[in-house]
Image (cartoon, rainbow, N blue to C red; front, side):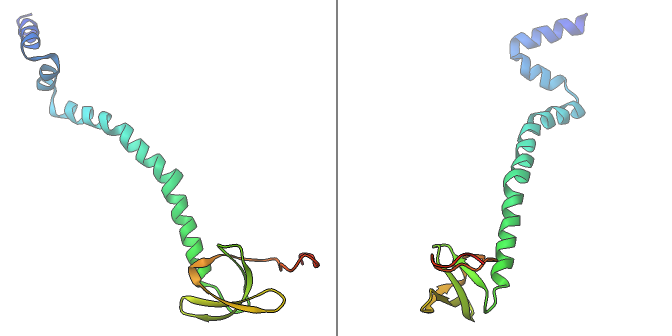
Length: 127
């Protein structure tokens, strides 16, 4: 009873939170802080699996696609230009565009994807 009276007197004098912190053991303090940081840890885990991991996977696939470009591949650039690769030199690709086979030089990073379908003019259909 005497301990309870001292505890109540201390709570009114110094504040309830400080008394509670003084009364907690080291193990209880660890659990208290772990519970406080648990929501932040859970948010980080959710962000990792929903945002960071899929983006890394997509970046890895894009890098692999750019590294595997070869002469003769039909590509689409980020600007929407369809062409066929005729020459590769380091980070510069030369592509042929249109029926007149106009050659253009583009940067390797400007390739959006390698086309599986052959795309031609309006007069012809997709093969």
